[in-house]
Image (cartoon, rainbow, N blue to C red):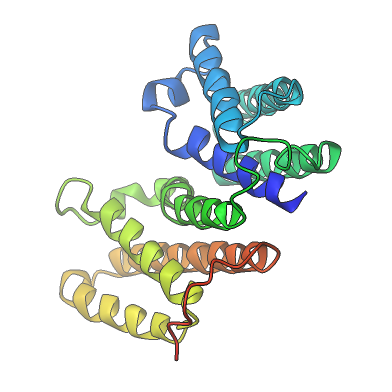
Length: 242
């Protein structure tokens, strides 16, 4: 069952955060955009599980229902509480993946890749990295949007790249059992940011909020990835902390 969940989680991460274009994300209220997205959900689920089981049609239908619910909620709230909607949407998607894994626990075992014992763990690493970096970027962007006027001006998309890199590094540090290194990462970023922030209180608070949120997201995501990995066949990677 847990192997099925790991495969479906990777499919979800790919469909929502890698393969979904900006146009599709911005136009889901249009039938064509929604159809493209749900088709991607179905194809990634089939590819990740190595199965064409009819239950995947149900998974795609539930995904569409959740997305439509988010659209309705966004309209009702007139765009307010964006982060709450984002987190609720993702929580419902992940809960649905767990429900389908319970419903068809042998989906992985009857798929094309069931003989590759370590593959679900590799998939978990991939989905964890995607959620830590790409999904984290969307979440932090939504959180910081109300204070966008205080955003420091620098390289185009420079802040996004920095966020992806720092969350990726935290992910690797925690999976390598080197979590103490996160403190050095915070110190390094503080030193590098010191000159640009200076005495500007608004900018200082903007950087602090964004940094803490980014680090927190990466830590939670990495911890969840480790927990899931502990339930799967080990990859046999040497312990880098010793």
